[in-house]
Amino acid sequence: MEKQSGMRLEVDESLVVPVVQEQIRIAVVREMEKIDDLFPKMVDHVLNQKVCSNGTVSNYSRENKHTFVEITFQNAIQSAAKEAIQEYITDNMDNFKKEFGQHIKKSTDELAQAFVNGIVEASEHAWRFKVDVSLPKDN
Image 1 (cartoon, rainbow, N blue to C red):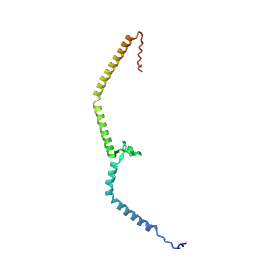
Image 2: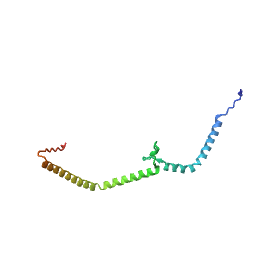
Image 3: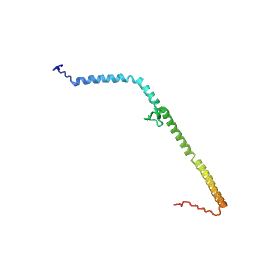
Image 4: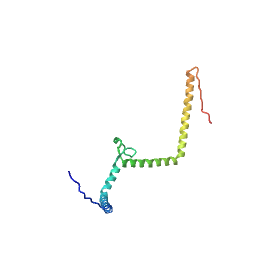
């Protein structure tokens, strides 16, 4: 067995801390110099990372079909298109109302004609028939 020596070495913490801090600072500065090489790689990785349709990385790899750049551009284009469509609709609201009104009138005319034709046809083929029309009451 080995005997331990009774020697003890004590170093004041105030002497060690500045040396350690300086070594850490030197190491950090050395690593920061590598950022010039690392930064473009990180940007490329983020922009070309495969993501799912909502722009996030899915836990299911098969859903990650698009790059982040594709989804971001798609979302921006869709947003701009939505805004342009809303603006167009707002600017042309009177025309839309007029067109919808004409379409509804035409549809109700066709519905009324079909109703009348149904009654006429039923009265021609049946000796007895009953028609009951109920409309909702206005409050």
